[in-house]
Amino acid sequence: MTDAVTDSRPDATDTPGWRWAPHWVLAFVALWPMPGYAEGVMVLGALIAIGRLLMARFRGGKALLSVQAWALTTVLFAAYWLPEVFSVVGAVDPARSMREALVDIRYLPFLWLVAAAVADTRGLRITLTGMAVIVAVWTLDALAEGLFATSPLFWGLDAAKQLVSSRPMCSAEDVAAVDRLSGVLGPCNLKIGVVLASLSPFLLYVAGRRFGATGWIVTAAAVGVVIVLAGARAAWITYTLVLVFSGWKLLGWKRLLLVLAAGAATLVVLAAVSPQVRDRVERTSHLLTADESGVDMALSGRARIWQAAVCMVRESPVNGVGVRGFRRAFDDCDAASGTAPAWGEGPALHAHQIVLEVGAETGILGLLLWLAGAAMAWRAWRYADAAARERARPAMLALAVTVFPLNTHLAFYSTFWGGLTLLLAALYAGSLLARPQGDPA
Image (cartoon, rainbow, N blue to C red):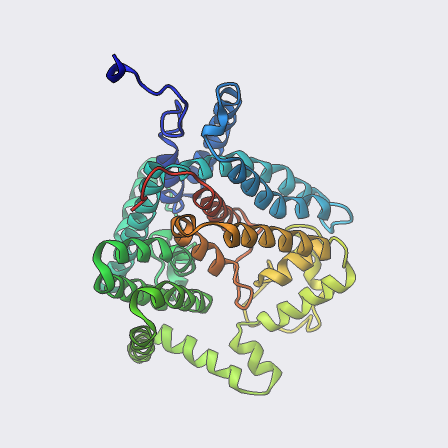
Protein backbone atom coordinates (compact mmCIF):
# COMPACT_ATOMS: atom_id res chain seq x y z
CA MET A 1 0.00 0.00 0.00
CA THR A 2 2.79 2.43 0.83
CA ASP A 3 4.37 1.89 -2.58
CA ALA A 4 1.24 3.20 -4.22
CA VAL A 5 1.32 6.45 -2.29
CA THR A 6 2.62 9.42 -4.29
CA ASP A 7 3.71 12.83 -3.15
CA SER A 8 1.03 15.32 -4.13
CA ARG A 9 2.91 18.45 -3.10
CA PRO A 10 3.30 21.01 -5.86
CA ASP A 11 6.67 21.21 -7.56
CA ALA A 12 8.01 23.62 -10.11
CA THR A 13 8.46 20.86 -12.67
CA ASP A 14 4.93 19.52 -12.12
CA THR A 15 3.12 22.84 -12.19
CA PRO A 16 0.83 22.74 -15.26
CA GLY A 17 1.93 25.03 -18.05
CA TRP A 18 5.46 25.75 -16.81
CA ARG A 19 7.37 22.87 -18.37
CA TRP A 20 7.34 24.84 -21.63
CA ALA A 21 8.94 27.94 -20.05
CA PRO A 22 12.56 27.08 -21.03
CA HIS A 23 11.52 26.46 -24.62
CA TRP A 24 9.66 29.76 -24.71
CA VAL A 25 12.75 31.62 -23.51
CA LEU A 26 14.94 29.89 -26.09
CA ALA A 27 12.46 30.69 -28.84
CA PHE A 28 12.64 34.36 -27.87
CA VAL A 29 16.45 34.34 -28.16
CA ALA A 30 16.52 32.30 -31.37
CA LEU A 31 14.14 34.77 -33.03
CA TRP A 32 16.32 37.83 -32.38
CA PRO A 33 17.28 37.93 -36.09
CA MET A 34 13.58 38.63 -36.72
CA PRO A 35 12.80 41.35 -34.14
CA GLY A 36 9.08 41.51 -34.84
CA TYR A 37 8.57 37.80 -34.21
CA ALA A 38 10.81 37.85 -31.14
CA GLU A 39 8.80 40.75 -29.72
CA GLY A 40 5.58 38.84 -30.39
CA VAL A 41 6.89 35.76 -28.57
CA MET A 42 7.94 37.92 -25.63
CA VAL A 43 4.59 39.72 -25.34
CA LEU A 44 2.60 36.50 -25.70
CA GLY A 45 4.81 34.83 -23.10
CA ALA A 46 4.24 37.76 -20.74
CA LEU A 47 0.46 37.48 -21.13
CA ILE A 48 0.48 33.74 -20.58
CA ALA A 49 2.76 34.17 -17.58
CA ILE A 50 0.30 36.62 -16.00
CA GLY A 51 -2.53 34.12 -16.42
CA ARG A 52 -0.54 31.21 -15.06
CA LEU A 53 0.68 33.25 -12.11
CA LEU A 54 -2.83 34.35 -11.18
CA MET A 55 -4.01 30.75 -11.22
CA ALA A 56 -0.94 29.37 -9.47
CA ARG A 57 -1.22 31.86 -6.62
CA PHE A 58 -4.33 30.03 -5.52
CA ARG A 59 -2.63 26.62 -5.85
CA GLY A 60 0.67 27.05 -4.06
CA GLY A 61 2.35 29.43 -6.48
CA LYS A 62 5.52 29.49 -4.37
CA ALA A 63 6.46 26.28 -6.17
CA LEU A 64 7.13 28.32 -9.30
CA LEU A 65 9.91 30.40 -7.76
CA SER A 66 11.41 30.93 -4.36
CA VAL A 67 10.31 34.07 -2.56
CA GLN A 68 13.86 35.41 -2.92
CA ALA A 69 13.81 34.83 -6.69
CA TRP A 70 10.46 36.63 -7.00
CA ALA A 71 11.88 39.55 -5.03
CA LEU A 72 15.23 39.87 -6.83
CA THR A 73 13.70 39.60 -10.30
CA THR A 74 11.18 42.31 -9.45
CA VAL A 75 13.82 44.56 -7.86
CA LEU A 76 16.11 44.30 -10.89
CA PHE A 77 13.20 45.18 -13.16
CA ALA A 78 12.29 48.14 -10.94
CA ALA A 79 15.88 49.41 -11.03
CA TYR A 80 15.60 49.49 -14.82
CA TRP A 81 12.00 50.71 -15.18
CA LEU A 82 11.50 53.30 -12.44
CA PRO A 83 14.13 55.66 -13.91
CA GLU A 84 12.05 55.65 -17.10
CA VAL A 85 8.96 56.73 -15.17
CA PHE A 86 10.74 59.52 -13.30
CA SER A 87 12.42 60.78 -16.47
CA VAL A 88 9.06 61.64 -18.06
CA VAL A 89 8.80 64.79 -15.92
CA GLY A 90 10.49 67.59 -17.86
CA ALA A 91 11.61 65.31 -20.71
CA VAL A 92 12.62 66.91 -24.02
CA ASP A 93 10.26 64.47 -25.74
CA PRO A 94 7.66 63.62 -23.07
CA ALA A 95 5.43 61.63 -25.44
CA ARG A 96 8.31 59.34 -26.43
CA SER A 97 9.52 58.92 -22.85
CA MET A 98 6.00 58.18 -21.59
CA ARG A 99 5.45 55.64 -24.36
CA GLU A 100 8.72 53.87 -23.52
CA ALA A 101 7.82 53.69 -19.82
CA LEU A 102 4.34 52.30 -20.51
CA VAL A 103 5.47 49.78 -23.11
CA ASP A 104 8.33 48.44 -20.98
CA ILE A 105 5.92 47.26 -18.28
CA ARG A 106 5.53 44.16 -20.46
CA TYR A 107 8.98 43.02 -19.42
CA LEU A 108 8.04 42.28 -15.80
CA PRO A 109 5.82 39.21 -16.30
CA PHE A 110 8.17 37.95 -18.98
CA LEU A 111 11.09 38.21 -16.55
CA TRP A 112 9.12 36.15 -14.04
CA LEU A 113 8.66 33.59 -16.80
CA VAL A 114 12.40 33.61 -17.56
CA ALA A 115 13.28 33.19 -13.88
CA ALA A 116 10.77 30.34 -13.58
CA ALA A 117 12.34 28.67 -16.62
CA VAL A 118 15.57 28.08 -14.67
CA ALA A 119 13.97 27.53 -11.24
CA ASP A 120 14.40 23.73 -11.31
CA THR A 121 17.04 21.27 -12.45
CA ARG A 122 15.32 20.31 -15.70
CA GLY A 123 14.58 23.88 -16.74
CA LEU A 124 18.10 25.05 -15.90
CA ARG A 125 19.64 22.22 -17.90
CA ILE A 126 17.44 22.87 -20.95
CA THR A 127 17.97 26.63 -20.84
CA LEU A 128 21.74 26.54 -20.41
CA THR A 129 22.18 23.90 -23.08
CA GLY A 130 19.79 25.68 -25.43
CA MET A 131 21.56 29.02 -25.03
CA ALA A 132 24.88 27.29 -25.72
CA VAL A 133 23.49 25.63 -28.85
CA ILE A 134 22.13 28.94 -30.18
CA VAL A 135 25.48 30.67 -29.66
CA ALA A 136 27.31 27.74 -31.26
CA VAL A 137 25.05 27.74 -34.33
CA TRP A 138 25.38 31.52 -34.76
CA THR A 139 29.17 31.21 -34.42
CA LEU A 140 29.43 28.48 -37.06
CA ASP A 141 27.16 30.49 -39.32
CA ALA A 142 29.39 33.58 -38.97
CA LEU A 143 32.49 31.48 -39.68
CA ALA A 144 30.78 30.23 -42.83
CA GLU A 145 30.11 33.83 -43.80
CA GLY A 146 33.79 34.59 -43.34
CA LEU A 147 34.67 31.79 -45.77
CA PHE A 148 31.89 32.18 -48.34
CA ALA A 149 30.91 35.87 -47.91
CA THR A 150 27.31 34.89 -47.10
CA SER A 151 25.62 33.91 -43.87
CA PRO A 152 23.67 30.71 -44.59
CA LEU A 153 21.16 31.42 -41.83
CA PHE A 154 20.55 35.02 -42.90
CA TRP A 155 20.32 33.95 -46.54
CA GLY A 156 17.59 31.48 -45.58
CA LEU A 157 15.70 34.02 -43.50
CA ASP A 158 15.97 36.63 -46.23
CA ALA A 159 14.72 34.19 -48.88
CA ALA A 160 11.75 33.28 -46.69
CA LYS A 161 11.00 36.97 -46.06
CA GLN A 162 11.02 37.73 -49.78
CA LEU A 163 8.81 34.74 -50.48
CA VAL A 164 6.24 35.92 -47.94
CA SER A 165 6.32 39.70 -48.38
CA SER A 166 8.31 40.23 -51.62
CA ARG A 167 10.71 42.45 -49.65
CA PRO A 168 14.23 41.69 -48.40
CA MET A 169 15.16 41.90 -44.73
CA CYS A 170 17.77 44.60 -45.46
CA SER A 171 17.92 47.31 -48.08
CA ALA A 172 20.40 47.26 -50.95
CA GLU A 173 22.16 50.27 -49.38
CA ASP A 174 22.73 48.36 -46.13
CA VAL A 175 24.08 45.34 -47.99
CA ALA A 176 26.44 47.51 -50.06
CA ALA A 177 27.72 49.45 -47.05
CA VAL A 178 28.51 46.47 -44.80
CA ASP A 179 32.22 46.29 -43.92
CA ARG A 180 32.33 43.47 -41.39
CA LEU A 181 30.81 40.10 -40.52
CA SER A 182 27.11 40.55 -39.95
CA GLY A 183 26.13 36.94 -39.25
CA VAL A 184 22.56 35.82 -38.77
CA LEU A 185 21.47 39.32 -37.69
CA GLY A 186 22.19 40.66 -41.16
CA PRO A 187 23.89 43.77 -42.62
CA CYS A 188 21.15 46.09 -41.34
CA ASN A 189 21.69 44.98 -37.72
CA LEU A 190 25.45 44.87 -37.17
CA LYS A 191 25.36 43.58 -33.61
CA ILE A 192 26.50 39.97 -33.97
CA GLY A 193 29.86 40.71 -32.30
CA VAL A 194 28.46 42.29 -29.15
CA VAL A 195 25.66 39.71 -28.93
CA LEU A 196 28.04 36.75 -29.13
CA ALA A 197 30.42 38.39 -26.66
CA SER A 198 27.63 38.84 -24.10
CA LEU A 199 26.19 35.34 -24.60
CA SER A 200 29.53 33.50 -24.91
CA PRO A 201 29.65 32.50 -21.19
CA PHE A 202 26.81 30.03 -21.82
CA LEU A 203 28.68 28.27 -24.64
CA LEU A 204 32.05 28.32 -22.87
CA TYR A 205 30.48 26.97 -19.67
CA VAL A 206 28.89 24.02 -21.45
CA ALA A 207 32.03 23.37 -23.54
CA GLY A 208 34.20 23.35 -20.43
CA ARG A 209 31.86 21.07 -18.47
CA ARG A 210 31.43 18.56 -21.28
CA PHE A 211 34.79 18.60 -23.07
CA GLY A 212 37.21 20.00 -20.52
CA ALA A 213 40.02 22.46 -21.19
CA THR A 214 40.51 21.38 -24.81
CA GLY A 215 36.84 21.95 -25.63
CA TRP A 216 36.91 25.32 -23.91
CA ILE A 217 40.01 26.46 -25.86
CA VAL A 218 38.67 25.35 -29.25
CA THR A 219 35.31 26.97 -28.58
CA ALA A 220 36.91 30.17 -27.30
CA ALA A 221 39.06 30.40 -30.44
CA ALA A 222 36.08 29.97 -32.78
CA VAL A 223 33.97 32.57 -31.01
CA GLY A 224 36.94 34.92 -30.75
CA VAL A 225 37.61 34.88 -34.50
CA VAL A 226 33.99 35.79 -35.19
CA ILE A 227 34.01 38.61 -32.63
CA VAL A 228 37.19 40.13 -34.09
CA LEU A 229 35.90 39.93 -37.66
CA ALA A 230 32.55 41.39 -36.57
CA GLY A 231 34.46 44.61 -35.93
CA ALA A 232 32.89 45.97 -32.73
CA ARG A 233 35.80 46.91 -30.46
CA ALA A 234 33.46 47.02 -27.46
CA ALA A 235 32.85 43.31 -28.08
CA TRP A 236 36.62 42.70 -28.00
CA ILE A 237 36.76 44.13 -24.46
CA THR A 238 33.66 42.22 -23.38
CA TYR A 239 35.00 38.94 -24.72
CA THR A 240 38.40 39.45 -23.09
CA LEU A 241 36.63 39.77 -19.74
CA VAL A 242 34.67 36.59 -20.46
CA LEU A 243 37.87 34.67 -21.26
CA VAL A 244 39.61 35.88 -18.12
CA PHE A 245 36.80 35.12 -15.69
CA SER A 246 35.66 31.85 -17.26
CA GLY A 247 39.10 30.48 -18.04
CA TRP A 248 41.20 31.09 -14.96
CA LYS A 249 39.48 28.42 -12.86
CA LEU A 250 39.46 25.82 -15.63
CA LEU A 251 42.92 26.44 -17.09
CA GLY A 252 44.87 28.14 -14.35
CA TRP A 253 46.60 31.47 -14.79
CA LYS A 254 49.63 30.19 -16.72
CA ARG A 255 47.65 28.42 -19.44
CA LEU A 256 45.15 31.27 -19.53
CA LEU A 257 47.96 33.74 -20.23
CA LEU A 258 49.09 31.52 -23.09
CA VAL A 259 45.54 31.53 -24.47
CA LEU A 260 45.37 35.33 -24.26
CA ALA A 261 48.77 35.63 -25.93
CA ALA A 262 47.56 33.35 -28.72
CA GLY A 263 44.48 35.53 -29.06
CA ALA A 264 46.62 38.65 -29.41
CA ALA A 265 48.70 36.92 -32.08
CA THR A 266 45.53 35.93 -33.91
CA LEU A 267 44.40 39.57 -33.85
CA VAL A 268 47.69 40.58 -35.47
CA VAL A 269 47.27 37.94 -38.18
CA LEU A 270 43.67 38.96 -38.87
CA ALA A 271 44.71 42.60 -39.05
CA ALA A 272 47.27 41.64 -41.67
CA VAL A 273 44.78 39.75 -43.88
CA SER A 274 41.56 41.70 -43.24
CA PRO A 275 41.36 45.38 -44.24
CA GLN A 276 38.39 45.92 -41.93
CA VAL A 277 40.23 44.57 -38.86
CA ARG A 278 43.34 46.52 -39.82
CA ASP A 279 41.30 49.73 -40.06
CA ARG A 280 39.92 49.26 -36.55
CA VAL A 281 43.34 48.47 -35.10
CA GLU A 282 44.82 51.57 -36.74
CA ARG A 283 41.91 53.69 -35.55
CA THR A 284 42.41 52.42 -32.00
CA SER A 285 46.09 53.37 -32.17
CA HIS A 286 45.04 57.05 -32.32
CA LEU A 287 44.36 56.73 -28.58
CA LEU A 288 48.12 56.96 -28.10
CA THR A 289 48.09 60.55 -29.32
CA ALA A 290 47.61 63.36 -26.83
CA ASP A 291 45.58 65.29 -29.37
CA GLU A 292 41.87 65.55 -28.56
CA SER A 293 40.85 65.07 -32.17
CA GLY A 294 42.97 61.92 -32.36
CA VAL A 295 41.22 60.44 -29.35
CA ASP A 296 37.84 61.30 -30.83
CA MET A 297 38.84 59.66 -34.10
CA ALA A 298 39.97 56.53 -32.27
CA LEU A 299 36.63 56.37 -30.51
CA SER A 300 34.64 56.95 -33.74
CA GLY A 301 33.34 60.25 -32.46
CA ARG A 302 32.30 58.98 -29.05
CA ALA A 303 34.39 61.57 -27.18
CA ARG A 304 32.18 64.25 -28.72
CA ILE A 305 29.07 62.27 -27.79
CA TRP A 306 30.27 61.81 -24.22
CA GLN A 307 30.92 65.53 -23.85
CA ALA A 308 27.33 66.14 -24.91
CA ALA A 309 26.12 63.53 -22.42
CA VAL A 310 27.98 65.27 -19.59
CA CYS A 311 26.32 68.52 -20.68
CA MET A 312 22.89 66.87 -20.43
CA VAL A 313 23.67 65.63 -16.93
CA ARG A 314 24.72 69.14 -15.97
CA GLU A 315 21.61 70.72 -17.49
CA SER A 316 19.10 68.12 -16.14
CA PRO A 317 20.84 66.56 -13.13
CA VAL A 318 17.84 65.16 -11.23
CA ASN A 319 15.93 63.04 -13.75
CA GLY A 320 17.67 63.67 -17.07
CA VAL A 321 16.38 64.64 -20.49
CA GLY A 322 14.00 61.66 -20.69
CA VAL A 323 14.46 58.09 -21.88
CA ARG A 324 15.27 57.99 -25.61
CA GLY A 325 15.48 61.79 -25.62
CA PHE A 326 19.25 61.87 -26.22
CA ARG A 327 18.95 62.54 -29.94
CA ARG A 328 16.57 65.44 -29.36
CA ALA A 329 18.83 67.03 -26.74
CA PHE A 330 22.10 66.38 -28.57
CA ASP A 331 22.22 69.49 -30.75
CA ASP A 332 21.84 71.84 -27.80
CA CYS A 333 24.74 70.16 -26.00
CA ASP A 334 27.02 69.53 -28.98
CA ALA A 335 30.08 71.71 -28.46
CA ALA A 336 31.23 71.08 -32.05
CA SER A 337 27.90 71.81 -33.68
CA GLY A 338 28.29 72.57 -37.36
CA THR A 339 31.30 70.32 -37.96
CA ALA A 340 30.96 66.90 -39.56
CA PRO A 341 30.94 64.14 -36.91
CA ALA A 342 33.21 61.10 -37.16
CA TRP A 343 30.24 58.71 -37.24
CA GLY A 344 28.65 60.26 -40.34
CA GLU A 345 25.53 62.35 -40.81
CA GLY A 346 22.83 63.12 -38.26
CA PRO A 347 22.78 63.53 -34.48
CA ALA A 348 24.02 60.94 -32.02
CA LEU A 349 21.22 58.51 -31.11
CA HIS A 350 22.44 57.54 -27.64
CA ALA A 351 25.38 58.01 -25.31
CA HIS A 352 27.22 54.75 -26.18
CA GLN A 353 28.19 54.28 -22.54
CA ILE A 354 25.99 52.90 -19.76
CA VAL A 355 26.82 55.43 -17.02
CA LEU A 356 26.46 58.40 -19.36
CA GLU A 357 23.30 57.02 -20.96
CA VAL A 358 21.57 56.47 -17.63
CA GLY A 359 22.86 59.79 -16.25
CA ALA A 360 21.91 61.83 -19.32
CA GLU A 361 18.47 60.29 -19.89
CA THR A 362 17.37 59.55 -16.30
CA GLY A 363 19.64 61.77 -14.19
CA ILE A 364 21.26 61.13 -10.84
CA LEU A 365 18.01 59.57 -9.64
CA GLY A 366 18.26 56.96 -12.37
CA LEU A 367 21.90 56.27 -11.58
CA LEU A 368 21.07 55.72 -7.92
CA LEU A 369 18.31 53.26 -8.82
CA TRP A 370 20.61 51.33 -11.15
CA LEU A 371 23.26 51.23 -8.41
CA ALA A 372 20.65 49.97 -5.95
CA GLY A 373 19.76 47.15 -8.35
CA ALA A 374 23.43 46.27 -8.76
CA ALA A 375 23.89 46.27 -4.99
CA MET A 376 20.96 43.88 -4.52
CA ALA A 377 22.30 41.56 -7.22
CA TRP A 378 25.73 41.56 -5.54
CA ARG A 379 24.21 41.00 -2.11
CA ALA A 380 22.30 37.97 -3.39
CA TRP A 381 25.52 36.54 -4.85
CA ARG A 382 27.50 37.25 -1.70
CA TYR A 383 25.10 35.38 0.58
CA ALA A 384 24.38 32.48 -1.79
CA ASP A 385 25.99 29.09 -1.16
CA ALA A 386 28.54 27.46 -3.45
CA ALA A 387 25.99 25.32 -5.30
CA ALA A 388 23.81 28.34 -6.06
CA ARG A 389 26.78 30.32 -7.34
CA GLU A 390 27.77 27.46 -9.62
CA ARG A 391 24.25 27.30 -11.06
CA ALA A 392 24.20 31.03 -11.72
CA ARG A 393 27.79 31.47 -12.89
CA PRO A 394 27.13 31.63 -16.68
CA ALA A 395 24.25 34.10 -16.33
CA MET A 396 26.15 36.14 -13.74
CA LEU A 397 29.19 36.48 -15.99
CA ALA A 398 27.07 37.30 -19.04
CA LEU A 399 25.21 40.02 -17.14
CA ALA A 400 28.35 41.44 -15.52
CA VAL A 401 30.33 41.82 -18.77
CA THR A 402 27.29 43.27 -20.56
CA VAL A 403 26.95 46.14 -18.06
CA PHE A 404 30.71 46.50 -17.41
CA PRO A 405 31.03 50.29 -17.08
CA LEU A 406 34.58 50.71 -18.49
CA ASN A 407 33.47 50.01 -22.03
CA THR A 408 31.23 51.41 -24.75
CA HIS A 409 27.70 50.05 -25.10
CA LEU A 410 24.57 49.84 -27.17
CA ALA A 411 21.49 51.70 -25.89
CA PHE A 412 20.20 49.96 -22.76
CA TYR A 413 16.81 51.64 -23.13
CA SER A 414 16.36 50.37 -26.68
CA THR A 415 14.08 47.40 -27.34
CA PHE A 416 16.82 45.04 -28.49
CA TRP A 417 19.63 45.69 -26.01
CA GLY A 418 17.30 46.44 -23.12
CA GLY A 419 15.50 43.13 -23.71
CA LEU A 420 18.80 41.24 -23.82
CA THR A 421 20.04 42.84 -20.59
CA LEU A 422 16.80 42.18 -18.71
CA LEU A 423 16.78 38.58 -19.96
CA LEU A 424 20.25 38.05 -18.48
CA ALA A 425 19.15 39.66 -15.21
CA ALA A 426 16.19 37.29 -14.92
CA LEU A 427 18.32 34.25 -15.77
CA TYR A 428 20.75 35.32 -13.05
CA ALA A 429 18.07 35.83 -10.40
CA GLY A 430 16.18 32.65 -11.24
CA SER A 431 19.22 30.37 -11.33
CA LEU A 432 20.92 31.85 -8.25
CA LEU A 433 17.87 31.73 -6.00
CA ALA A 434 16.23 28.57 -7.35
CA ARG A 435 15.84 25.37 -5.35
CA PRO A 436 16.79 22.66 -7.83
CA GLN A 437 16.89 18.99 -6.92
CA GLY A 438 20.30 17.58 -7.65
CA ASP A 439 23.17 18.70 -9.80
CA PRO A 440 22.20 20.84 -12.83
CA ALA A 441 25.10 19.40 -14.81
